[in-house]
Image (cartoon, rainbow, N blue to C red; front, side, top):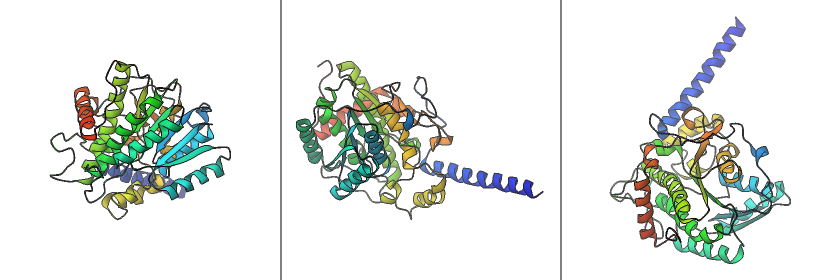
Length: 353
């Protein structure tokens, strides 16, 4: 009888936290009633860092590598033998991150570069520095992000802050580093998206900067949808122009990082739900697995979106992530690309050149 009660209580507890996890997914808008998965053989579900091939001799840049998944990316790549450049805003946190990695990986080749994704002059200055100091770039991980600040902010260039940081800054950075990427034998660009794009994510072409009405999670979803569309369009343009780049996208599900605390805040509805479910969410290291697979696995392919495959893709084994219909709209992606070139004053090489 006691054993039966224990079993029933355990089941009820599991059912309870699973229900709360599903509710948190709905709060983020992670209902996958529609969407598609790109046709490709899925990765090995239990792929881990033990499966990562040696990265000795390869050079990677990770944006936002001072915390969360970006830090885990940088540490794992350094442990695999790569030279890693961490690019982020705060020099003190940057040095602390370099020191932490070197403590765990004594022979790590890791350095920090300060820049601000929300300031295109800073992005271009970083590109210029790296073009003069690096022989090539084998991998670019567009990881840094901000999430759903309560108040609308604007960047140094006048863009809405989430659009500027999550999407436009990475767009310009990729263009700046394209010459270095093309010097690699097998360059890869991995751009981070989010399951928040399933919260009715769409590109608001009539008001990209949300000057008329600002709803934090809607704006975040647009920025991350733009990132996913960028990843796919970059692959199409690489194929057409012969750049030789493999462009992938990845998302971490919901992982324990500083994103919520620094965005909507722990006292917000999202923050309270996140805090209540924290022990059942993925660690930052687990959240980094889809990105690291895309960046290093020989079998990973350009134009594919990787992520966890559990309920609502909040956590679970590695696999092919669900692609929402807006992200598969090539015409909309090309339109967004053209608009972004115009408003940022950035031009990728013409196709065929």
